[in-house]
Image 1: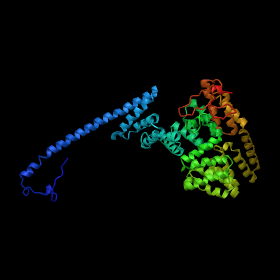
Image 2 (image 1 turned 45 degrees about the vertical axis):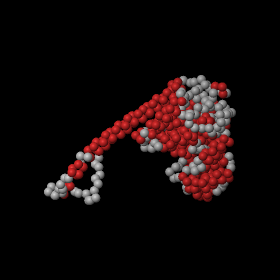
Image 3 (image 1 turned 30 degrees about the horizontal axis):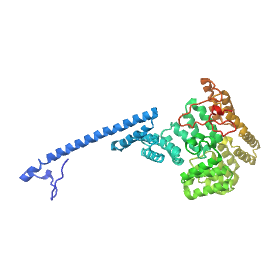
Length: 498
């Protein structure tokens, strides 16, 4: 380190000063150079001492993480809840050291310790856990895990499902093989009135599920398709949305949607879910009121979500306001097309433009994806278009198909199916499910159930009504209710078997 020189004159370029013109060395100038050596030596000694102290402190701090890891391991293996607090304190001290402050693995460990530390309040633990997770960038090696945990916390503990959905989708983008995040996203869609929008995510869950557990997934998918409001009893209890003695009902579904809207008032989906509930209850006027309130709060942001736009169009058509519905359809997010997009485009073309040729084609596209295969009402719309086009033979086929589907949707038919699902793992169950989906023309589901016969050959048939399929940790283990009670998509307990 070179000490600054004090000088009242301009600096001298030593390269341009000749030997002859060099000034004579006086006593004062001769003693200046040697005096710098002790200062340099002192500086070097201090630097070595500081570096050594910093290294020693770093090594000591590194021990905090090692101790925390051992504590967490013991807490999990030996069920010692008090160790979580000590592990948290060790990790907090470790992460305060500048050298380790961005250690993503340690931050993830701290999140686990925070959530399990019973000495903290629920609010403080979750708040600090989310802070730690947000400090881990998505591009970090731990980014996918951080987003997955963030999504799970927002879903299960904070109940901000809009933020949960964003985090889970980011986690899936970073790690396409993350089964739990896919599963939670599927359930999140159900909880927000979007079960009909979950087909793509379900099949990804199915692909990621171990073959031995796929029958359980197919049973859960049946519940998503036909009994979504009652499909997540245990999950809703775990989230605190249902009491321990409550069962899902239309009333508490309303309360859930209203609660989500209050928790996240700027999320379009929350407003649309509540409005859709009123539409399902045949009250389009109150649904319109909900959507108008959303317009005041959100402005054009509401049109960024296709579920909101679809709900608005449905509400307007229920009220006979087709011109307004067309204006709403123009705001559809162009990149997101599916059943609702094709269906409502067809309805508007048929009702406003009498373009039945194009409408019939669009109805066919809508019927190809869920819930199209069971939407006998839309099939009737297609039949009407064909009749107006003088295609009577094709119209008759659509009419017959619509009647067949309508019959398959009767309560008696589904009671038979649910009874079969109570005996998951048997040939009788698989035969009934293959026939059910084949009759509906849903070949992908029919083939998936057909594939499960290989498990019967592998393991044999389990005793009826006493099946206990192993569920992954992220699956809500819900007993399947007997016929006549609320269906839940899972197995009955032995005492509850009919």
